Length: 115
Length: 117
Image (cartoon, rainbow over all chains, first blue to last red):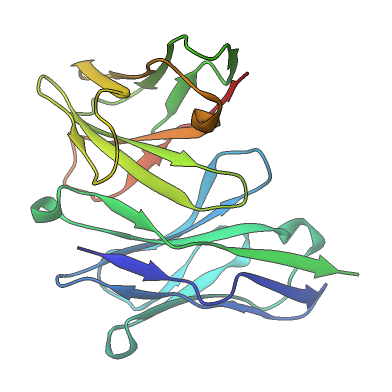
């Protein structure tokens, strides 16, 4: 079975500063990796995904993530944070057909942005 | 793009009653849909996998008689919370996988907030 660890419950960064949110996964087969963002009381928005190919993935809103198989990591980065980026961020790992296409979420990291 | 809707977006019900939540894929067919619940300030927990035309597969610890899932068509799955109690109050989110592709992405609905009084 797959699992996801997001070691940081919350992170505070200054507006304009860079951001890195950590994600480690465990899955016995090829992982399908996702980052989602959720604003309070809202649904999920997909930021980016990794299935195969280039290990540096570009997403929406200026986010990127790098897949590192040797470290079982898929960290999310943004070079300059905006106040509107304050939200909850979830890393997720998806199984392929043999795993029933299930997606398992990490506990989430809440991002606070200070002026 | 692929769109998933949920209805209702919010529902308040009295303890002991049942509530049905619908999840629809609007522009694609989905043989597989998933139901999650999310408690305040917590992550999404996978409850069950809904398979069109067959029984749902429940995750460990999820009561199948409590959370009835029906996936009667390629675009609709329903979750019925039976004999709801205040501890069932939560945010319920569904997702659907496009059967017409070989991709692994799921498309998420906007969620349904259930409050049991």
